[in-house]
Image (cartoon, rainbow, N blue to C red; front, side, top):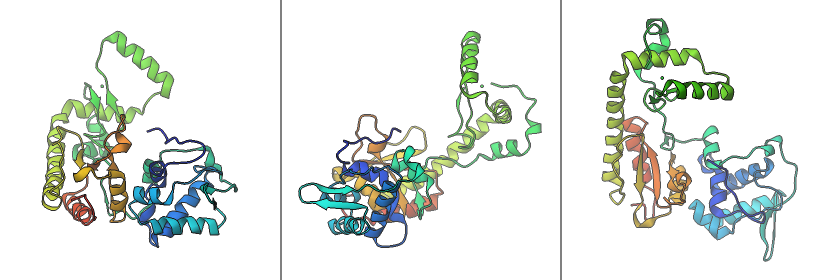
Length: 311
């Protein structure tokens, strides 16, 4: 995911919302949490000196908070010497010392996944638990290493998210060229994981496919059932595979604002806009159904408590 871009004179409300990440999940008044997060982004150089912040009304709408919350946050930034406001020029970040982290910038929404936050139900993360057959293979590899291979697809969403290994089947010449290119790019992959994957493909792959399908079906049924009961206005296409449900909010509601409101309920979801190459999905959210069924049901109950057109 590329970092958001904005004119040198200012940053839009949606772009700032993405950079803020999971700002409202800590304890404390919302205006103070917002001001603290903006100040941190200024300290790291992600909000450079001179940058004009969004208008209070626009940022309030994007964050699904009151305008008073944004106004109080901006005032706190001014009181602490982090921002200044001028009639007709808006509120801008003022020059100050930045930390060494200013050399790196990333999409704030996804970078926020690396930070500690009080999120009770993370429906933004599509990562699966380790299949028991894979766990056994990793624990006792000697029972598997003498079996033949059969190097076709990717395994992180089927076997285990931590098993970053895939395979390719092709002609001898194609494989030779690909192997040479890979060796030059990454100096080779771990032999242990490759051998484990090869043995599992040979011996227990179909069992893992069956187990994972049942594992996911139970979770999808729990999420879909909870949505039908608690949020009957939502629609979604039933997925043919994968780990996520794409829910469309009724009334063309803004999914970015909904995601912000969801965070304040302790539930993390991904606005569809962030995952769209064509800048669509403004009224959709991506819900990963990799959490246990009871967590998914509880998460939907929290989502249904969000006021507005989400129902």
